[in-house]
Image (cartoon, rainbow, N blue to C red):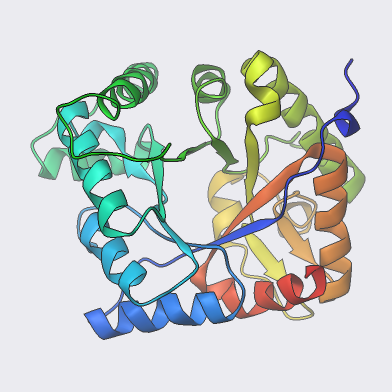
Length: 295
């Protein structure tokens, strides 16, 4: 097997997701705070009942100077590729080339949103097939004469968890953000959690093929504990059969001092080439302490 260390590690990139704000001023304040704390990307989700993602990222870009702005992630099934390509090209233009295009197949829990929108909610296999088709069509459309002019390669991130999604997309995207790592139900140590991460990266490597050296690998930080009780709601959502103790062994559940966690992420970077980390805004201050240690 190819040595994982054969690839030159990429720089760390930290993304924070914001889901709600009461005003334009609050969106701008959130983005500025993330930039001041050292984050590289600010992101918004794509759900009915929340702010529309495209105008929101434009507002955050206008309030900042350095951070990228992106979606984490758009539900591909909400859109027709030609219309989505137009929006992506326009937002990239309005953000002066700071837009990162995050796309996903749509989670199972989004079914009521599709019904409310009058859209069909396909089975998991069909949703992933539609995601793959959308990626291919948008790549072609962004270089056509039927869109606003695009002067650069707009980075595409896909986030997900399952084997089928990884196989379908790993060879065609710029960033693959793993929304958790599958583990055995009897996981009993952090070493076993790290071994599960190693297996997942090998799976991604095989799925990406020759594209793997060009692929930025990401991991969702599902919980972080700097000495207080970690909020385990998100890891429990993806791992309902694990105990609280077992959840702490997951690669995306970090605990210890900022220095200890920074060392863990350095290990993930140098051993598994995982360099992109996405968090929820509730963990922003904690992760900022880790970023400070790393930089």
